[in-house]
Length: 176
Image 1 (tube, one colour):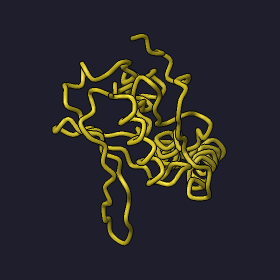
Image 2 (cartoon, one colour):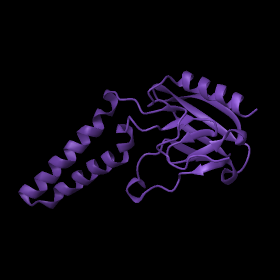
Image 3 (cartoon, rainbow, N blue to C red):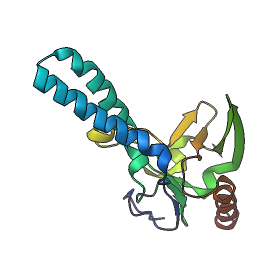
Image 4 (cartoon, rainbow, N blue to C red):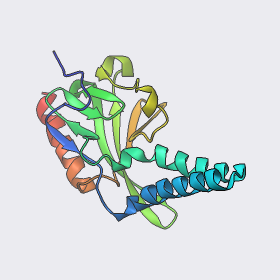
């Protein structure tokens, strides 16, 4: 089986981050970082560097939310791909669940992909090693000790139930 090793060119069904007003704070904090940095330069007071660094760190961490043209998660004939994680082969997946999690005053949806083999044999392509400049940016996935990949699907451009249905349909088709 030959799978593409390029994270940006995987083909098939893909989902990207949604462009909406909720990511406006990333632009605001970038502007604040520049304002505080300018204040440091003009006044010569170094205490402006602390809020500038905090605003720049927040902007840097959340930068992937602004990449609306880059596929974040999706699926093709080889398996499910996740940005900065890899390509999980279909036969390595035990189940795909959509879970509602109550957090304070809202409900978030999480896609849980349970693997039936160790991660090293489940991945067709491993993209976990990121370039140095992306090392501390937000990741769309988390993995727990139960061999489960968890993906918060709230920020994506398609409804959570449509993403889950499409992944299930493709999983049933390609694993047979």
